[in-house]
Image (cartoon, rainbow, N blue to C red):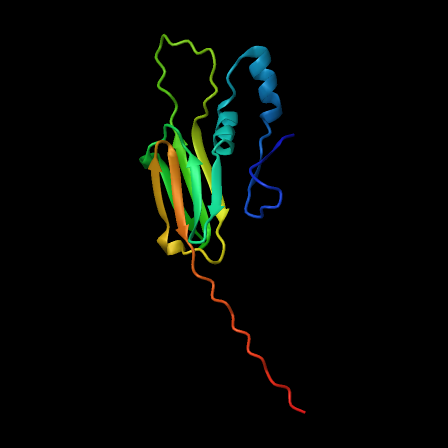
Amino acid sequence: MSIIRRSSVFDPFSLDLWDPFDSFQGLFNNALSVPRSNFASDTAAIANTRIDWKETPEAHVFKADLPGVKKEEVKVEVEDGRVLKISGERSKEHEEKNDKWHRVERSSGKFLRSFRLPENAKVDQVKASIENGVLTITVPKEEIKKTEVKAIDISG
């Protein structure tokens, strides 16, 4: 059994994905040199979508490595008010009749990652762009108003 940890143990926003085929992958690839099944490949496509999330004073910034994926193949949505969803599909390479594959390591298939945004996120002002295979999503932050503390005189 293999649990793929996406970030720090202490990050409440991280997602842990369990890949039931992970422990068998090495056995098959090393001993037999055969490609994995479509289901295992799809699981790997989801798990291999690496995303960084950093917080600056002005915004939450997400960066995803999506080499070879066109902007038309990626969808960025905010669902249920505060859940940022990044999804899409990596297309398989076109196969010719006479092609003989020796190794298939690049993943293809659908991918989906979700992140619960904090309360200070301006979900109506999310911006996304893709350049050189890197998807950048910027979620501006609201200023958190500091509560005023008013001292009360005690009589008596």
